[in-house]
Amino acid sequence: MNVVFAVKQYISKMIEDSGPGMKVLLMDKETTGIVSMVYTQSEILQKEVYLFERIDSQNREIMKHLKAICFLRPTKENVDYIIQELRRPKYTIYFIYFSNVISKSDVKSLAEADEQEVVAEVQEFYGDYIAVNPHLFSLNILGCCQGRNWDPAQLSRTTQGLTALLLSLKKCPMIRYQLSSEAAKRLAECVKQVITKEYELFEFRRTEVPPLLLILDRCDDAITPLLNQWTYQAMVHELLGINNNRIDLSRVPGISKDLREVVLSAENDEFYANNMYLNFAEIGSNIKNLMEDFQKKKPKEQQKLESIADMKAFVENYPQFKKMSGTVSKHVTVVGELSRLVSERNLLEVSEVEQELACQNDHSSALQNIKRLLQNPKVTEFDAARLVMLYALHYERHSSNSLPGLMMDLRNKGVSEKYRKLVSAVVEYGGKRVRGSDLFSPKDAVAITKQFLKGLKKMYIHSINLSYMKPWIISSKEGLRKTYILI
Image (tube, rainbow, N blue to C red; front, side, top):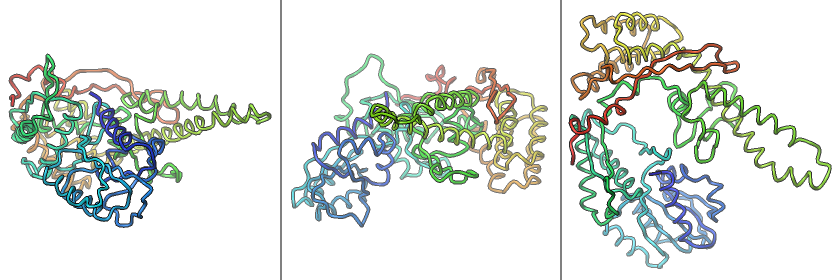
């Protein structure tokens, strides 16, 4: 089950089915992101797609020598746009692909608008999600609920994304949802309704063990997202922010113009693919090896070109050399900025205390360490609030609970009200009253001794030992029968 491969296959088939000749790819805001995650612009250019346009753009020129491949979400807005397009076609022929199920009435409206008979094909290709990694997808939704209830529009979008995922992977699953979560139950019911309604689409070959769609509610483990992460991809996501594989580095001190925005994609960056799940200390060592390898190759490429053979060899190797140069510059810049932020925000020490709060039950030590860090000017208000949130969740019902004092410490530190309010909000969201499991029992924590950030030249000269909290989902498999209900 590879979601990147599934979406990439859809895009490839669209282009192949349109036949030879110059093409334009017409997309909407969301499908533009979907395509960019699995194909680079240079890769698509090699398939005779020479123009990329938005369906909502008002300034597109008439280009009758181009075929149009339209990849759109089946929203009312997009259907209206394509109807307007067909009434005044700008291209010679149209191949229309919707990223999810489209209603028969909308198809009829398209047919009525196609008076000039320029539509060659209308199909459903179920790439209605952002394929981040082979086993990870996103719908790029921020804030799906209002309180504890679904926002209706986001519930609809999530249902569409999940059912498209199942169709693209050719799976008709058994569905289980978290018994204690009304939101999980609602989503499970919506997915089941779509599978029942569109049963013909879900008639895939049965397997001996049916696939399982497990729907969980984050409220059962509010701890994991509050912990600092120490693997490459997770650190980039947490400290720099990454959106559709793009990282904005424009605020990095002294950044060069060509590195203000960089792309990190495991599909097109071998170093990133090999290192994205490694610990930061290992990344530093591997960056060093990458630079040494680059330095070894660099002089060879810059030798004098004394013969035709030398020139030919240079031309053949130059693109690879240039690509390697870009890879080295990009990763050195990203790792350097991560290192700067770790040092600036004192994250090594903060992370030690976070792990103590997550994995141990020494209230006195935890309280003392939090108070000490709250006095440290390097600790940001964001990190300070997270520490107190972890304390509030762990020691919510402890007999010596000192949350009021910590809240006063946050105020004295100058932590803004929006962050202070999050402390009570996270307890209401994922506190003991809400959780269906005991996050802090010994069975949920595993001690893994690691040495971090050792030997990173010009970064750190010490190491750190951490205990790691095992994410609750890993321990939850044993309790599927009693914790989840089948739908």
